[in-house]
Image (cartoon, rainbow, N blue to C red):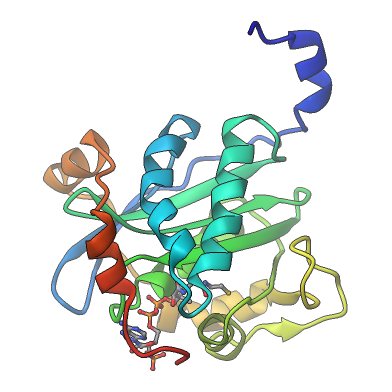
Length: 229
Ligand SMILES: CC(C)(COP(=O)(O)OP(=O)(O)OC[C@H]1O[C@@H](n2cnc3c(N)ncnc32)[C@H](O)[C@@H]1OP(=O)(O)O)[C@@H](O)C(=O)NCCC(=O)NCCS
């Protein structure tokens, strides 16, 4: 069906200009190199292939977080999200995690989700740090609003940074927001924000050739483990 561009102009929300996230490489605890880079809107269908198996994993809130991320990525794909972005982590081309969020306005960022598809390597922690780095250092924002849906997420963001509690409602409709301020970011940065730039050409070539997805059994195995930790 042809797209009614007049109606689309009404349905498509405002987009703030956003500088791209400069890609980096993080050496994981197992020695593997994870490339963290910004996904393009056209990458969404490939990313969804890795998120889809997680919808059915009733462990550590993988199902609810993946379902929400899946919807947010589709909303971006169909131009139904205001100033969204997604950063992905890849090892040997394989997608191992993703984070997303958006700009609420020029100064305030809205953090959405963090999904680690391989575990025990702090992949989620590195990706969340990259998204805070993007908001504060590259998009020039003053603060980011965050909520946790899982106890592991709460430990990773609210406790490890630590974030500041607030009474500001969060867009995800759960508990009130916790805030990453510039001061908190600067203090946490030496401990939590790691990675090297530029990404070596060989790693970049592998990462950008394809976004590979592991098969469903492999993803289940990687996520399986110590329930409820
Ligand atoms: C929250 C999340 C992003 C954190 O990712 P991460 O930093 O890579 O951390 P992991 O999930 O690998 O490990 C979390 C803890 O469980 C332990 N763990 C390791 N392997 C594990 C496994 N196979 N299963 C369960 N726990 C495992 C880790 O050692 C770690 O303990 P620590 O905090 O003492 O270091 C990730 O757990 C995730 O995607 N969870 C589902 C979605 C979610 O909750 N997102 C955040 C919403 S707020």
